[in-house]
Image 1 (tube, rainbow over the protein chains, first blue to last red):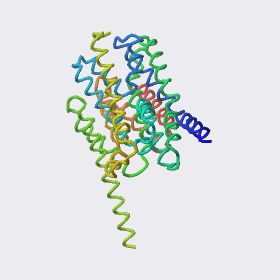
Image 2 (cartoon, one colour):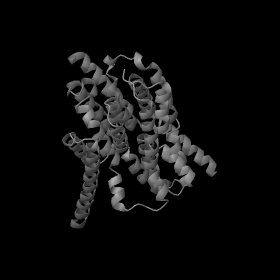
Image 3 (cartoon, each protein chain N blue to C red):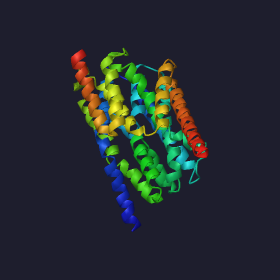
Image 4 (spheres, each protein chain N blue to C red):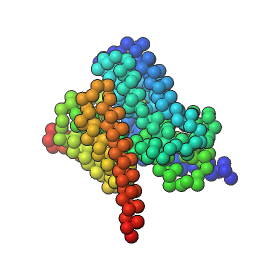
Length: 242
Length: 110
């Protein structure tokens, strides 16, 4: 029985990730195209996607390398963009932490925005899921997206230089991120976090080495957490008053 | 077409691979099944909705396709994408509306 339910959990994750096909496909291809335009060959572009498997960090590194930034700046900035992965990892730990270490190591490789977003919503909604089921669901969310990301990078790198600049494909990346954020804004605290992060990102844009991103991200997190606390306290006060 | 020195490129790829995996594995490896303190979880809940807008905002306001010059079509396309996503809760609808708005406006306004 548990095997069947673990298997069905995998397929549930697989199905839930379907909308991200149209995100990972263009993203991966875009990375391949931009990498090819920057002078990477197909093997280099594909190795990049296989080894790093983190869209935003890959784009950040590519951008900075084209600007001839020092290697250490490229690494620090791209890893700063990826700091959110550490936070995702911490946030998944209460749900996946009891799994064997080797499974957690495999899962760690697959921690990306999509797998995290889908899984955390599922785990919060269904607290009765077993740890193997959660792990299966989590890996299922990467069942299409991860291979697609690699394949799309490959195709993009092949197509590469043939795409004219006039298509303005660069803006697909911000649009895809924005499309993901909208559905995540479920409470006033989410909105407060998002809005304060946007304002801080604009104010802190002048900071070097992508530091503005970290400052804005942390500001958004603190504002979101404080808004949540404030709303809870207000609700509690109302109940006491009644 | 700019060419990177292959050594630099592989240092970046391997460095990012090790760094990213470490960031992703750190908590999953060390924390085991201990629960995280409430204040930490409360902040972590807002990671995605804070970091992603922070990442996207400069790309929207100073798009690379215009060499960093603020552009009305890009701004409006971003607003359309976010609004449709917020109302419909549908990633694909948001993406399609945003892309439609961008290319429509670029065609109309230039």
